[in-house]
Figure (spheres, rainbow, N blue to C red):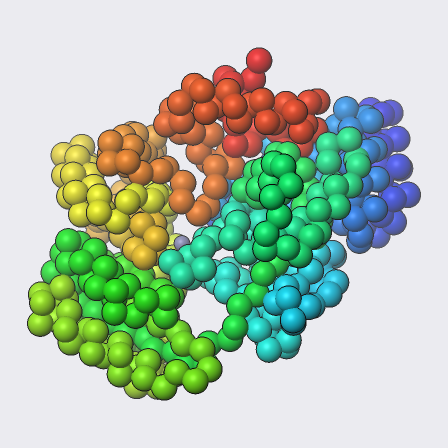
Length: 477
Ligand code: ZN
């Protein structure tokens, strides 16, 4: 270790305390690999600051020493955005100790929280105030709100409430020179120049470190209806989505899609789960919520589905008769990713398309893949309500997952070219991180890449934050 690294470690220990400067391999290891064990990095140190001032002092010290900084929340990201590069030259800043709920304002329906609070803790703070934080995703028990903001996370309620970006009213951010921008305003209207917070939301730690946020809350759901619809094809799914939107208005909060293969995998690993409508090619899991005073929700959902079936917008449907049944229907959907993990590696895609283009995309991409990869099968599911598909390519039984993974780049190329041709995006809710940097360079125009690079240079001129993430190296001047 060089003298300068030792000096920096001493400075960092003085800022966060010896106990929260981690340098031994066994202590730093969990921070140097992503949740899917796909990206492995190294670091000069991991620090666990407890407070915005400490984060700012850490960034100042690192910037002064010419050392790069990688922010990390719950480390549940799927694109390697929070894993340092293998050079060992970065300091990882874990926000995990900064989990205070700073304040709740029920009359304004807002909560101010620190970045390291888990999504579940934010939801609980909202519920304790008689309100609800609508962001909902599979890792909510361990992902942090700072990570949700850094990646502009989506989840299962985007159809009704929008993604993380739509929930954020204000931010506190540590900048690349160690100054703190206090933008913690709790306003729903504020047209005072450029909306700076939007630059940091979704920037994956490349422009600043979010340390706190003001989030907007909604009224709690007093009644809830959950239904499963069986479908012949995706044209029907898109038609059913339109009909349910029309029938239920903003009471429709979720419209999740599962192929028969995805549902079958979920049930293979959880055979206790129900199979209420066997024998169809696709399924839609539908959720509707209503506020106080509404009494007809379940009946309205049932009527809308009956009309849809009569109009051939669905083959069959069932409405959960209890909260317990609803939970079991949701478990079918929520267990797909874990079931896939147990089956072995697969090539994942988090894509979005206009709903109207999804049937044509799935048909065309499916035949393009079948031509080059006859040994592959598709596990398709996702959030059809906002056009977001998790389009995963796995080895069919008997085929080698390893040889398929070796050709992941070819698979990605086919899928992303098809997505692009159908007006879609290569990342809907997981971000870019390290995983999709090259793809970003391919599918965003030179002008878009130039503008992104200029934003990066304006906010982080010396490249302190999260090197090797989001922007391709080729765009570096
Ligand atoms: Zn998702």
